[in-house]
Length: 169
Image 1 (tube, rainbow, N blue to C red):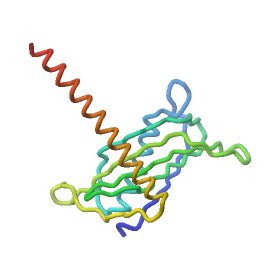
Image 2 (image 1 turned 90 degrees about the vertical axis):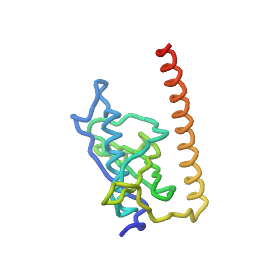
Image 3 (image 1 turned 60 degrees about the vertical axis):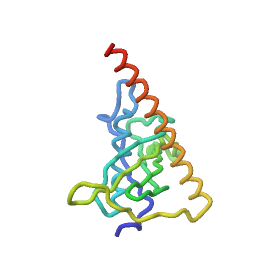
Image 4 (image 1 turned 180 degrees about the vertical axis):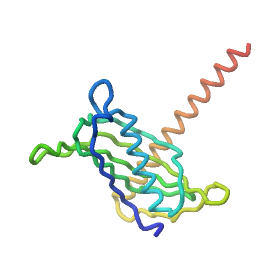
């Protein structure tokens, strides 16, 4: 049922195949887990096939090790006409230790756009309205992170234009 599922958690076990040359879980693996979880959350909210259009503000805060139990939590924090913004936290804990505390490993905002099943064009999603102060804070945070990302895109575009002009003459 679309428009009902605002929060979603997936769990993964960090396996030996997930590590990089430094012996920690590879950032690309973490990003894959983020995308899988956020996609399922977007599907749960919109009820429609959705695509990732942006990942913003990604921060790798602490490493994840082989054998750690990883929780990826996606929470809807903003909707547009066809877009859904999710705050995603990746946390980890060592299940082999009694009473081991969970730590934040990664955080980001992921934006999905729902697509219709016919032409692959953006489709309307159920609107979400912040109901609490925390919801309003998260919605504002999501829009600020996305604005920063747009600023970066504009800066990159200016550099590309300058490079093209330089190459042309």
